[in-house]
Structure formats: C-alpha cells, structure tokens
Length: 331
Image (cartoon, rainbow, N blue to C red):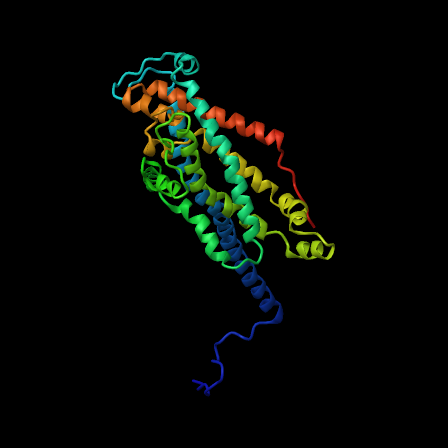
C-alpha cells in the first residue's frame, strides 16, 4: 500500500479538472447567483411599489371615516325629519331646504356675516402691512413677530372672555376712553347697531396673526437679489412692494382671501361666547346649532349645514374665477 506524503493528493483522487469543465461550472454558479438576485430584486421591487400605497391607505381610510362618511350622513339627515333621538327617520324630500330659504328666522341671519366679511379685508391689510415691514431689517423684529402671532395661539373661548371684560359697561375699554373725556360710551355688546362691529373687531385681533405668518413666509421666499437690483434702479420701498412683493405673493393673497370668506360665513366662537347670539349677533352657525340641539330639529339643521357648505364652495369658485391663480415668474 502506497503511503501518501503530506501535501500530496491521494492516489485514488480525481485528476485536476480541465479548463472547459471549470468554465462550465463557473457559468452554472453565475446563473444560479443571478436567479437568486433576480428573485430578491423582484420581491424588493414589489414592496417598493406597495409601500407608498400602504402609507396612503391609512390616511385615506381616516379621511373617509371622519370626513366623507359624516358628510354623506349629513346629506341623508337633511332630507329627513330626524330629531336626533328616534330610531326612525322619515324622508321629507327637500322640505327642509325650502324652509331654510323661506323661513325669515333662518336665512336672513346670513347678513350678519357681512360685518365679518368687511372686517376680514381690514384683517388682510393689517397682516400684509406688518408682514412687509417686518420682512426687512427692523429693530426688535422677532419681538413684534411674536406679538402679532400670539393672539392666534390663544384658545377662542379665552379670547371671548377677555374681550367680554373689555367691552362690558365700565370695563377696560370704557375706562380707557374716560381718560380722553368720553363720559358716555356706547353699549359695545348691548346695542344692536354696534355689537356686530365689536365682535368683528375681536375676530380681526385674533386671526390677523395667521395671515401675518402666511404673508411673512411668502415675502421671505422672494430672492434678495431682486431687492438689490431695485435699489440700484432707485426704487423706494413703495415701488418695491408693488413691483416685487405683491406679484410674488399673489397666490398667498388669494389663499388668504378664500380663508377670510369661508371664515366670515362660518364664524361661531366669538359671538357664541360673548353674546350667545343675542342683540342681533346671531350667526348662521349659531342658529344651526340651536336648531339641532335646542329645538331638536336635526334634519333641518343638517340642511342648513349643507346650504352653508355650498355657499362657501360657490363663493370660493367665484373668487377663483374673478382672481385667477396666475403663475408669476419674478426672475
């Protein structure tokens, strides 16, 4: 029996593979590895395509559950005489909608929103004015930005109580006016001719900060080189505003106008907390809530809510047609 020396191949071991055989084995190994990679990449590609839809499905599900499904129920309730308690709901067709437009206690309340609608333009003007000033280098600009935005962070109920003490007889406002010789101030919340202006002024104070932040962010996004070129041409701040700032923030102005219109039509917190709708300050939303929860006419209240929704959509559509959203290229 032959003894194999260390490091030598056994006598019965197969001979070294030839070059063609090694090439075939290498090709087989490469094809097997390629098939494994293709299977893994196929699975990874499928998950890559499904992942955005999985994230989107959660958001769409919540949107359908908490927005569109309640809206569908609202339309259904609006054609019934449901009182909010009975299990049976009798269909009444469009009778509720006819009552909304014919009952003098319901639809004329919409005219109260005109006070807030007019005040919203003062709100936009004030917000745009301070946003333009504070967008340039101004001393204590961060402090003034915080002061202007702070009222928007306060809860609406708290704002209502603060201004309730401000406008009450002998309150803060009457005391301040007495320093200037006003001895017989009006009833700010008791006079039907003044109460809506007082409430609209309160809304202006609260919501100016929101428009201010929108305008300030839009103005700061304008390239600074445009201001430098305008200064070289001798343009003052007023000319820069009309030639650079206003065209550059036109879309934000349109958005703010839409928010102001919808907010003026659906105002609720301030008049509800301060007056409860008394002395001619009853708004359409307050009237809707009273119809649903005080008079137990949920079907009629649902019709009122649907009418409000369509009015806001129509006004917004008219605004977009009158002031189209044009693309502005300042460069």
